[in-house]
Amino acid sequence: MALWKTITTFFIKTFFPWFKAYVWPLIKEQVMAAVMELIGWIFERLNRFFSEKSRKQEEQAKQRSEEAETKAESAENEQDRARYEAEARVWKEVVEQFRRDNEELKSELELMRRDAEARSKVNIQSMNIDASAEEDGTKLSIGKTTYQLPKID
Image (cartoon, rainbow, N blue to C red; front, side, top):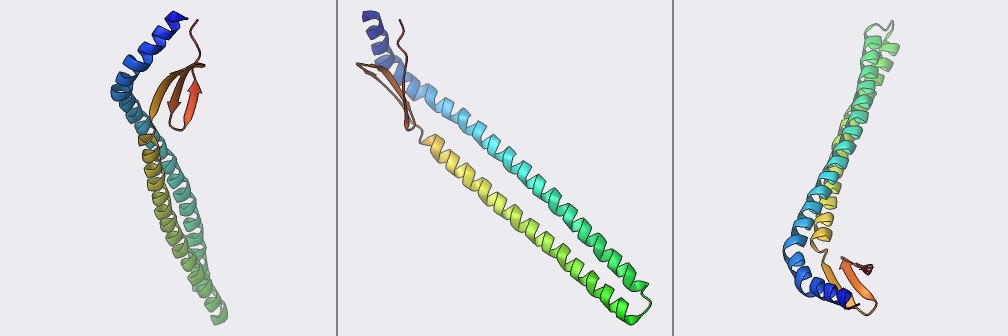
């Protein structure tokens, strides 16, 4: 038991302050970089997914608009021509609405990405580490969580 107490005392009083001052900031820096990369990857994938979906919807609406214009040009009477021209105008409006929705979605995703990055930075930067030797063993606290470390026999 004396050896365990000596090791614990060395760890808590000598090694741990050095680790906390010099190594822990480097670990947090690496965690921060990994989290920021992950957030960037996730939001880039979401942006690509929604952009592709919106692009396909725009293409379909544009195609329908062009089909209606073609029908209007070859209409046999004025009533059919007016109906197809109205249909073409509606599809053009749908195309524009899809574009606006896509831009709005991109803006919203960018705001969400920035918020996720900011929250992650705050959480990681405020993540403190501490250790203590107590009767029931050594405890390690990281952030808001405390761990009971196993004894070395």
